Image (cartoon, rainbow, N blue to C red):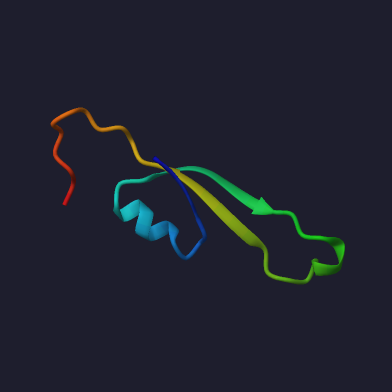
Length: 56
């Protein structure tokens, strides 16, 4: 599975076994240059083999 998360949500997904795949910073228009940057993280959960236990 692949999910998209904000900075606030990345820790939750990592705690559930997702691994960081890519960090993307959203480009801002010129008139927003002084605003806080927006970042999106893509995370992937590694495939489990059939019968493999789920981490608790």
